[in-house]
Image (cartoon, rainbow, N blue to C red):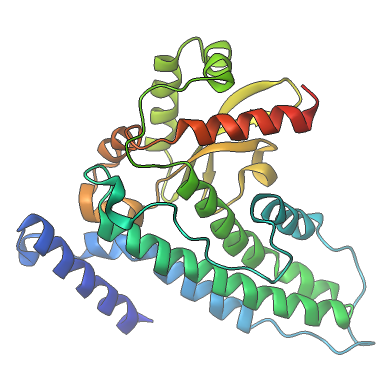
Length: 287
């Protein structure tokens, strides 16, 4: 694992030097290591899934399966129309470099084709092991797979929403029903922007900043999630707008200046997509 991480760091060093002209020996290697954290986490989760042993039928202990397993697959199905285990990388609706200068094409390419694909590969592997556990009625093994299903399923779901939340020649202020909802929930767009930015910048370690819809009170809320925890399972909110604040999402371009990355994100927000999600969430909730 250490060799793989060093190889990944070497690639990041080369690309950053090409983009910025900064000599690699001027930057501490542990800073680059932070950008590789997600790749390492994905590999570690793959090893975790492989290490789960399913007991033979008749030997496995009975119990209660966590409802979050079914919930995770239901949320993926609702977003992507994918059946359990039949997961694939959704194509971007724009070129990798279409969000420049706000988000570099290299970041988008690595993020989409490497990191997102990694979550999908692990989710498929976890699902196969889940099917095996179900056949043996091994509830312990099923529940042991929950962290892998949430992490990789959440990674697949969160990134899918993230890609659609962005578009070239976008940004500005929202229009339509979501614009009014933002005013009603936060007082003004500027107030929402300030609160969303502060929450996203303030995420401890790796995670996401979200604008979500609460069906119970018909209001919008800002929330954060650690790692790849899905918004619906964590906070009970329908995801409308998500911002990935794992360091891999911005480090090559913004280094450790997460606040600058969050500020730049507002230049690529696909507000028509957010509005579409909001209108659907309201309709589904009967509002």
